Amino acid sequence: MSTNDNPPEEPMGSELPPQDEPEQGARREAQPGGPAQPAPPVRPAGSAEPGGAAPAVAPTPPAEPAQTGRQRLAQGLWPPRVSRAQLIVALLLFVLGLGLAIQVRSNSDSSALRGARQEDLVRILDELDGRTKRLEDEKQRLEDQRKELESSSNQAEEARRQTVEKERQLGILAGTVAAQGPGITLKITDPKGQVQSDQLLDTLQELRAAGAEAIQINGVRVVASSFLSDEGGGVGIDGKKITQPYEFKVIGKPQDLEPALNIPGGVVQTLEKEQATVAVTRSAKIVVDALRAAKQPDYARSSSS
Image 1: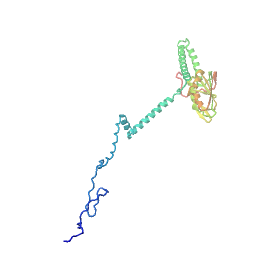
Image 2 (image 1 turned 30 degrees about the vertical axis):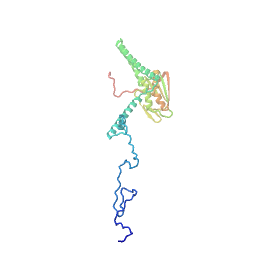
Image 3 (image 1 turned 60 degrees about the vertical axis):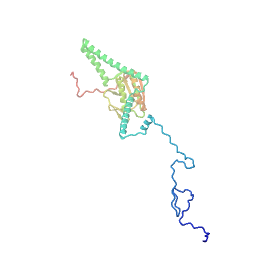
Image 4 (image 1 turned 90 degrees about the horizontal axis):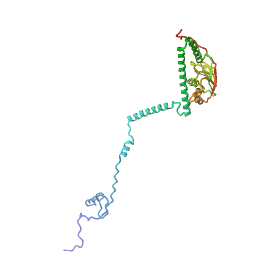
């Protein structure tokens, strides 16, 4: 039997021993001619690797503090959640409040005495006292006349005398007779032509309220039935045109007439706002001699006839 020096051949298809290779994925690819290798086991997150340190654990976020009642109320109120009905109600309340504010302001500003000085208020009070005294004197005079008529032995003569006196008084008021007495002279100079008939009418009304008994403007007698109108370049009184300067001759008590024109927000201040110049002069004797023709009524007749 001969000795064979060659080593025996390895049988075909024998498996090669496994070799250590670096990990390149979750599974190894099968080597040519051999079966697929199983994938290494998957470690759970946070578990320590063999022979290594434990991985760092993510910190837990701190818990939010509990909100107070005020904070919850603020979050409920802001941002506001407004419905259409609430908007309509809010708009109506705003309009109502605005109307009330305008009404209160107009009522407050309508008084000419707002912001007046103490001296002006005292003067106005004295003027009111003067008007009251004049009315009381007139009442007392009428009562005296009644008593004279009742007690006079010759009632017919006394009645005639009082009738003549009454006719004289009515003639002064109607402008059919001249009059004289204490009073004031009011002169209005209007170089820019800003004074209109309504300002002159307000002046007349203020003078009458202060006790004026006879008034004449630029030679025209003013009576209860007089009317004023705007004319080109001037003012018309009962159809007669007058131009500036406007001069008022007024018979009455000067101590009542002048303060009535100078009250806060009165005639003088109103005219001065129109850049007019106003001058008031007291006098012990004012003559009103402009006359008006007496008119006979067309339909009225005395009930005694």
